[in-house]
Length: 119
Image 1 (cartoon, rainbow, N blue to C red):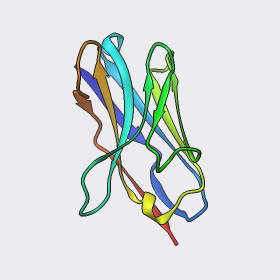
Image 2: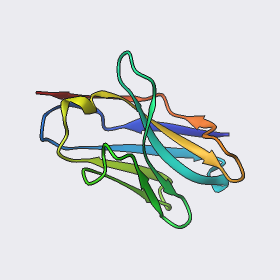
Image 3: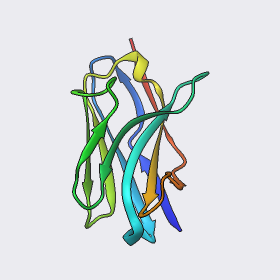
Image 4: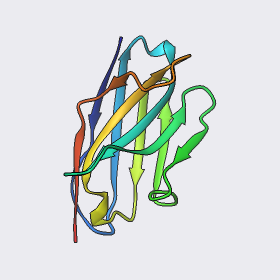
């Protein structure tokens, strides 16, 4: 099992920045990839960004490319999401997720952290 705990959400004005953190514990040696997803009220959960745990290769949704940066600290078993130039449409609950090696899905999820961007 892998446990994920997010932090860093909050209220920010449009154009501002926030950094989310996701601390992983448990069987972290088996993690292949970690990602951030988000879900806005009345909308489906959507992919935001992902990072390969070993190589550091990153992947982004088009809507956040150039504004958000995902990174990881393998020593601290923590993934970060630096969010710049925030827009009101970025308002959502942000979830951290982990994909085990050999799995095709993200099997582990955090509890989520609220990000609210005011106009």
